[in-house]
Length: 244
Image 1 (cartoon, rainbow, N blue to C red):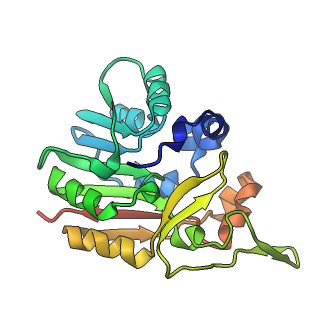
Image 2: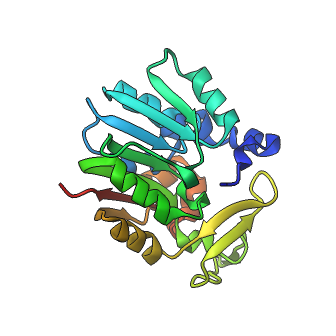
């Protein structure tokens, strides 16, 4: 089973302070780039994998989605999503993405933001999603970039002449990485970018776009903390399509 760190009270409290928790999609600097990768939403059947507070679910509903299903392994996150969502049009469900089962050809779009790097069995999930998407359906997701997950010690950097750099360690050695982020022992899975892409290809997907995301000058000017992200990609954004 996927580690349910989000139900840890200390982690949940820390996560609640992030801009993306307080401001939603507007607090996620990569959202404009990710949004550009999305297909037409109106009238579509959509699933959000690791929906958290339900920000994307509510956005998709506002864009005219026919049905939105938000899945998360955390009871606390789902409770917050339900509190923040008026009405009952969005279906929130507790689910472990490692063992997910979906109806074949039932979805137009599978979306996920910063959740899939927690999973060990990414091959199984991609196969499940490929089968669940209708022909022409899309998978659009973001995840922590392997350059970030391979850093020797998360948060550790070298500073010289006012410039920061993050040494990469063990990039070729895939597997579990532990970090102390809001709580001790947060488990993430490090896999090479090639492994991500080849898993999608093996499942049958056609890769449409890959963005090793970094902030632009305007974003850094508005939020100087983002200047660290111009030195190496922390995230990657990817869109893939089921042929048909």
